[in-house]
Length: 362
Image (cartoon, rainbow, N blue to C red; front, side, top):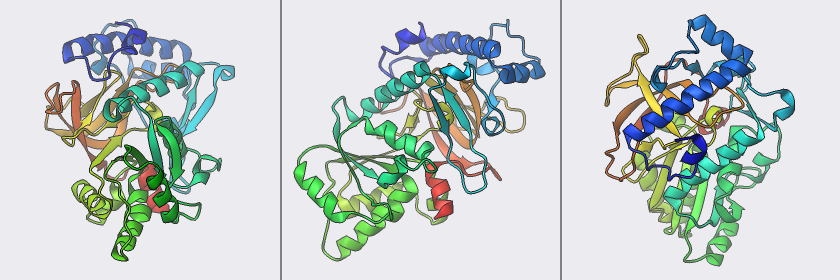
């Protein structure tokens, strides 16, 4: 199966045999493309002694540490074909990753993300509440992974409202009017985990104590960006969901895992609490001692695979996150593919997620 043929498939429809054959072909194709077109990537593989003519499984191909995107200009297309440069989130003084996109890679990122998210939301666009401030997509200094995340998820919204003003204060009256206007309809909410807790949940709790409540029982919340700050405050993912349900009636909450280096290939949490890889991506846990593959249920450093990147060598990356691959093709939710959990950042790694880097500044 070619990549273009896979783009017509449902995102969780391949079993492990079919998916492995597809990933073997696509990842080797991308490895050869980037070896040919990117001097920096070619130098990395040559230094590793990799034989580009070899035919091996995708999980045995060299991976690039995600940190290298902060230190090298990694691109596989001429400068004139770059239509967008994405940057990662970072705290003050941190270097940021720079990801160079041509038109095909950018378009495929949007298509893949739309297919994945639609599997959870359904095909129809919904009225949407963005739990952030309007300036985040306008201020060039702020427009990084955070702004890109908002714009990326905005395609699923039909009518949109920002829950916060530019001072990060809750627009309670505006939200009340919005919910009255779309009463009875499914409402999509999107935001980053710490901001939702700090600027949305806490303010709704205060209003509820004063006798004013918002009814979001028809809402579906998708959130991401890291848990470091909330876990340090002893707020678990389960408590996060329960508290939101208590204060505004939210019943459906999905965390997601993703990164600017592999935009589009996000891993969304299913109703069973598992993050899922789609047919366009894969995840591998590796032992830190020798980078051998972990068994199911064994915690390791996460390697993420994406079939999308053609303009930069981001198809096989070693993250700085720890996690556990829990199984494959047998999640009770019915979606095929690997499912996993993320434990957090490896010791002494820099903060990266939009939620965690904002929390550090906050």
